[in-house]
Length: 378
Image (cartoon, rainbow, N blue to C red; front, top):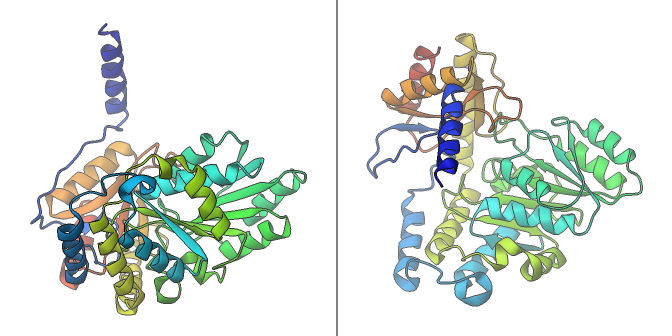
């Protein structure tokens, strides 16, 4: 009965030859690496008010939620967090999940039960793709960030009720979706629009309310928003925000909500403290904007054809997966953490370094990190 293990070894060898091996790299609490790989855009993960709120809740509630939300896992902290998120996002209601991945699965699957066609952007995150694949509904993949292409697809299926799925800021290249134009397409054709606002929440829009708010689409009945709490809020968990009827439907039918242990209360408390800080963090958002311009200028001067980041994500194309691995490893050896994205994480098969900006690091560390990235380039 060892044949299956041999098959796994052969598969691992094939991945290794293609430069697609992935390795865990545990970090200590006192890690001194300059972080341009994580998603703590506003530098709130270790903010004293966030940590203090989480610590107080930890002492009061204990380590875990002890059950699913519908059994024993819902606390007053979860309810308060959902109210804060709904208010911030400009939505009637919100529901918190234990991860953004599970929130996306639930949102896509729930809407799939109400429609007979899904139109998904070619560069969507894996969680959205997995939701589409498991929905049981026909899925048409639309060319990246093209409202015109989405219009053509919907016009080719005039008798079908559709949901269009997109990110606001795309997680690989960091470009901004044309949300206003996309909503004009969907609303004119009676389709729903589902937007994953993970990389825009806290960074774009009034008081950091996200890409949907920046596009003036908040609170519309035909727009559903999802997001993770693990990026600009420095916490964990996910949220689906939209009409109260949708949230009620998710509570009754959402498998990744019903059968999953709830977000720990201490994390919920820390996330809500981070929301308060993020809403007032225009100074930190200004730092992100300035650093986006700086990194673009520096990399272009070094010969890299990069696009200015719409929010906090910027990608630099590498010659191939092995080159991307070596480049990222060389950066880490010199005290700088960068993201290394290779297939299948990259939808076009091109390997990249992904840089995520962080308002919490010092100017001198940021400048040094850019020096390292340029000097170690393949």
